[in-house]
Amino acid sequence: MSLAGKPAAGSELASALGSCKGALAGVAAFSGVSNILMLNGALFMLQVYDRVLPSRSVPTLVGLAILAGILYVGQAIIDLVRGRIMARIGTELDEALSGRVFTAITRLPLLVGYQGDGLQPQRDIDSIRSFLSGPGPNAFFELPWLPFYLAIIWSFHPVLGITAICGAIILVLLTATTEILTRRPASAAVLTGARRNILAEASRRNAEVLAAMGMGRRLHDQWRDASRQCLAQQQRVSDVTGGLGSASRALRLMLQSAMLGVGAWLVIHGEATGGIIIAGSILVGRALAPVDLAITHWRNFVGARQSWRRLGQLLARLPQDVQPMALPAPRSSLTVDRLVIGAPGTQRVVVQGMEFKLDAGSGIGVIGPSGSGKSSLVRALVGAWRPLAGRVKLDGAALDQWPSEQLGRQVGYLPQDVELFAGTVADNIARFDPYRDPGVVVAAARAAGVHDLIVSLPNGYETQIGEGGAALSAGQRQRVALARALHGNPFLVVLDEPNSNLDVEGEIALAEAIRGVKARAGIVVIVTHRPNILSELDFVLAMKEGQMHMIGPRERVLAKLLLLQPANNANPKPVSISPKRPN
Image 1 (tube, rainbow, N blue to C red):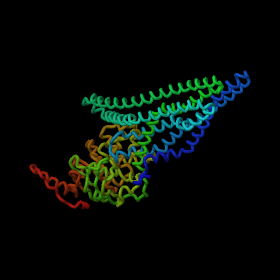
Image 2: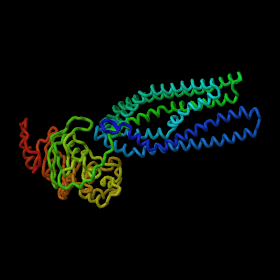
Image 3: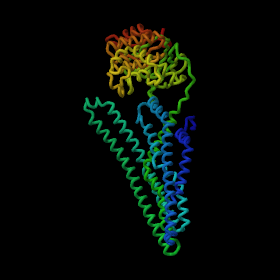
């Protein structure tokens, strides 16, 4: 744990991987057995040259061949099981962390805004899983066996051991060089790749704007520049790993030939047998194979290590929420207590001095010029943005005292930019509840005045609307989203510009929905630029430059606003009233 009380970066990942320590111990044991069985080929050749050929014994050769064949089959089975265990470790790690990663992806924009590549955490966990499931980790399980092989070669003859050790030192130095030369370009490739992905995703979302306004070529040029930078960094990493990998393979082959030459020199001087020449060459190739494998897969290792670091930092920054005790469903009031709001990722205050209280069965309209902080206020009211200071309370309990699932059932929210999800109309209205009650879904649609529209669709409530609700018009999406906000009769219903895309029929349905919420003792908060919907509300909050300009009963506030707008009055003075509680 860090001094600040938050989990240290990487501790949650290490804990998840630690839950697989039994499987990892099994992989290590299998690797040990596999490395011992790797002596099979060298010992077979040693026996053939030193026993079979001098004795010319065919039965001995057959017996050795059968034994070697059995050991080779056993080694293949062990390597197969080891690979499958590593693949399942990667899957288990993904299973343990995927929920946290998804939650982090959805929470991060609420804390830092829409900065960077929002899907990078998902790619990071995919990178870690792919690395664990690949051949790269085998090198790290087999590298500790390098001294074991060198010791056996040394036992054949010290000169052979010195030759093998020198080659091992050179290969280890190549591995260190690979790490030094690839660290910086690999990090740069991730950053430029993220910028390229962000630009491509933004262009995809705004395809209509690009086509209509002839901006496609310009955005393509920006994307191409980012892509070239990314490819250049990736190519540099590939060149380094490829070049040093080729050098290591060539060095390993040279070392095997050197072992043959040194062994021949020892045989000539009567210090070794012919079998030792072949066995030593085979063993040195096997001893240095993990180093060669590590260099070959170094790029994947670097990518997985960067993903591990980024993911660990992200999960440490967004620790898992401890769900508070469930509270009784709110029934009486919404209180805004000295609220100060800042945009996520910045300390810039966009709304301040908010203080009012609404009782059950009432509604308030939030009005003001663009940029006055209306949308920021309602985001804080539903808990999407955490306030810099002050509190939003339901029945006296601050929003952070409510379990997230319970709070979600008591809040209905229609954002200014309506976003539906791929699925059926019923899925979207029911907020993708797998245990939804069809009667509740239909009731929400009727409350939003959209039931008749839905049943006129090709498959009614089971109509697939596509990604973002592409199969529906803007007005239809807004009305379905209104039904989603009303699903389950939430106590607090917050609507941000709910009539921006509505026709006359939709306006009537919206008014009916507002009256319905008030009639069942709910609270309605509406941001609007259209004054006609204000007639359904009890109070009006006028905002200006992020602060309360006026608040009070609808008729009084609207009358004072009209008085402040004479034709030639350039400096209107605000009317000061107590914002504590409208009466």
